[in-house]
Amino acid sequence: MTNIFDKISLGYIGYRLLWGVPVLLAVVITSFIVLRFTPGGPFDREKPLPPNILKNLRTQYRLDRPMLPVYTMPKDAREKEEILAFEEKHGAFAIGPVHVSLGGALQTQLFSYLGQLLKGDLGVSMKFTQVSVNDIIKRTFPVSLLLGLLAFFLAFLIGIALGTAAAYYQDSWLDRAVMLFSAFGFSMPNFVLAAGLIFLFSLKAQLLPPALWEGPLYWVLPVVTLALAPASYIARLTRSGVIESLHEDFIRTARAKGVNERMILLKHALANALGPLVTIGGPMLAMLVTGSFIIELVFAIPGMGRYFVTAVIDRDYPLVMGVTVVYASFIVIANIAVDVLYGIIDPRVEV
Image 1 (cartoon, rainbow, N blue to C red):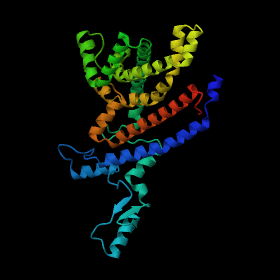
Image 2: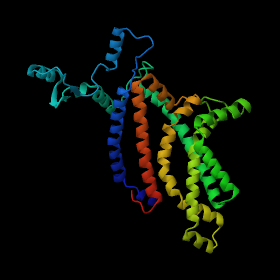
Image 3: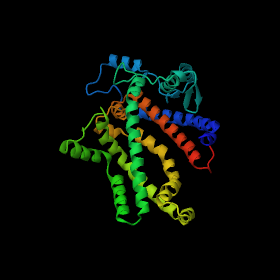
């Protein structure tokens, strides 16, 4: 155990974390701008709100402020006095026809949000009034995390077992069955699979509950649905890796020494094929945790992905941004963890 921890460099982890900061900043700024330029708004209704109420709402959520500290000079402003008045009003300086305001930057929506984000405040939901985005995420993220983790471990368990068996019995009926399963898992949309599992195991057999998240029995169908596609990919990757390992010289040497066949398969061939699986592990975990929107909607799971979908539809800016920040942070951390783990299992890589 000491040797494992001796391989981990805190400087490397700190270096990767520092590089994660500009990545998160780029995600936040890009998401903020795209969201604001998307047609529609949080207060659009079939019946328009009265102008005074709409004005108050926009003021309350700071939507009356300019989005960016950039202003375009009106085309009819040609006189020097008009230009000076424009620059004085916005605290701006000219870059060609575009004027940038540094003095008023903190008053823009973007810089105001970034300052709020540095304090750990994700704002207040525009849909679920009087409820902070922090509270919504604290309540829903553990559900999405549990769903993703269960699907992740199930996918690796099934994928590695099937892939190893298919590689060992290459070109047999078992190998073809695993490849058929893999093709099925790749091509089957998860919402179609979810509907089929609900029909078979809930409506017909009445063995499992069709929805909600109230205990282990409720977890089975959504976890299986979410795990099928990654399990198919892992099975194919494991199969190819183990087949390649079984043809290496060290495997022939182990067999010549009379090493048990099970030990050869599990300790040598499979262990040598785990590198690519570790590489995809971080992104796959992040994908399962952050990409369960459809599953949470179909099974009525009170997770963060379900709130994210409704927030996008309702243009709930603070909630969309809050979920995006959490998801992006999770992906960055997961990728760093994979790099560190890869350095631990592969002596050729230094971390």
